[in-house]
Image (cartoon, rainbow, N blue to C red; front, side, top):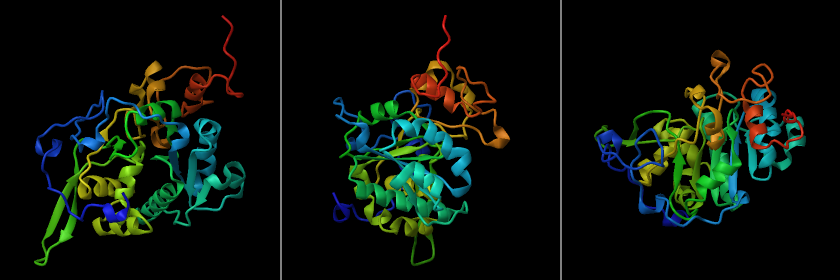
Length: 322
């Protein structure tokens, strides 16, 4: 369905249903947090879709100052396994990065400052580029995420891309509230909704992305974000849950630097969809995984994870002979 088929603008019943109002719905298996049941189209059916990696559009959001310190690591690790599916959205025409990524580096011409407006500017470009691509799934991640393409493909194969699917992990244990409309008497109506944190990554089906178009395409995303004065990932949740009334599917397989990542250990690390690592003030917040790389050689643990998943990678040390 295109923009003309989108439901009329409506704020949705504030606080009705869901954990915010005492109701508990259904998230994905193993989810530590409750999730409200979405429309039937948002619930995985028994049949798995014949999905291939080429059907997924992976958007990596970055900025000029992290091209070296963060992006080089991603290009060396997981992006090497999903190069044709991955697009890097940045704010600077970096010739060195252009040589590495070609037309998969997209200069958004957005500001490099970390403000709501700059973040929403990039998300707006990501959304439009996904619609242009014709691919079945839109997945957004940050430049401090490791994406496991195999587990991502397995997760999304449980759904149909033509149905309403919004899957990710909230960073909060409760829905947020935003002012939605100003009434004629000056009072404001509010809407409550969950959102998947961009720092852990999230995915949206093409069917749902098309329904978002009136509030998200061709710069409308920036306008929507300004109206509710929310950053990019919150605005995504506002459009999907607050306006379209499609519920977020909470998944425990996405991870951000806001979590205690040390709780992820051993084999379980390799079963996640996304991983992350702590910032310089919290550099010990990394997944607990073995491997031949020490913490000094591999402070993020991304190289160690990659070599466990793809041991034949040319720069991975050969396994020690027993």
